[in-house]
Length: 392
Image (cartoon, rainbow, N blue to C red; front, side, top):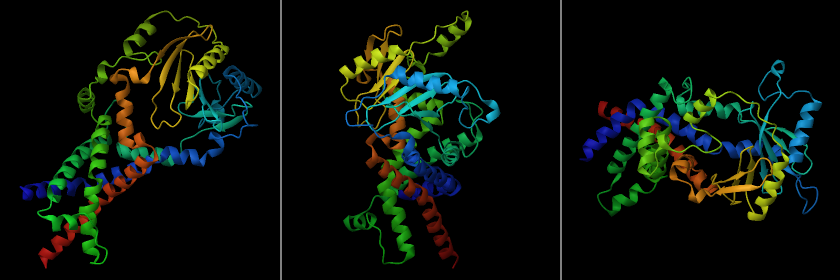
């Protein structure tokens, strides 16, 4: 039986080993993308409170200050846009930190994920946050081998190759686990350690066998969760397995479903009254009484999202509905009571990236991904040495 699994392990690894190495090594880089980005832009994400116990400005004052700054400069330029394409920006949300050293982050409809960092105590504009081109390129390689699909949800050659390679990687890992099973206790000891004083060939062999065993569980979790971004049928099956159906997941108030969007498009367009940002002040005041500590409060025109746990590593947010005219809170939807169909995607993302356990799991995922990238290379080396021995 092991002979069959050895053949499966070898002949699947030879054609796709390099692709698997690229996927794993780029994934290792992306584990710390947010940490590195924030560290390199520390001046945008952290502020110094003017004095101990100082209170941040009300949200309406922050919004007014931003609008005034926009008026003073006439127009803002969206990040990455040429100066000739300057446009008026529409404020859509403000994220207020629970940490007294954190900055407020303001989102605009025209700027995508780029946010404007603002000092919550003074209203001073600190600058635009940005994602670095290096990480954007690494992400394109990791997900699509630099061949992204034309639009979200569509296919491309790179996306299909990554998906197929990930499926093959699962088979390689499982077959490797079967091959690894030792015959006796002495063999078990040898397969759990890396020899450093028995030559390079033994070192690479032990690295392939022992390190591969230690990394297998993490690599399987990464692969099995990552496939949800490659194949729709797999995503539906995986979500259903955990009691959720992605296609039938109810849409939240902030993100209407396609049927709602079509209905809105068919209705006559009406001029909505300008949102009164003072409603946020009342809502935030009530929330701070209900949530003495929190990680962030994100204010939108229709809903508020609050992450109650200041040490949360996942985005487990309660969704608050409020009256936009008065700011009175009308409903609180707790994360713990939300249907799985609305939370399962976040869990899959957290288990794919290693963010579910904070820095400890990120380090473990990083090391496992590095090992996953090296395993095909050591496998090629061992295969080449065996072929040379046969010829001589």
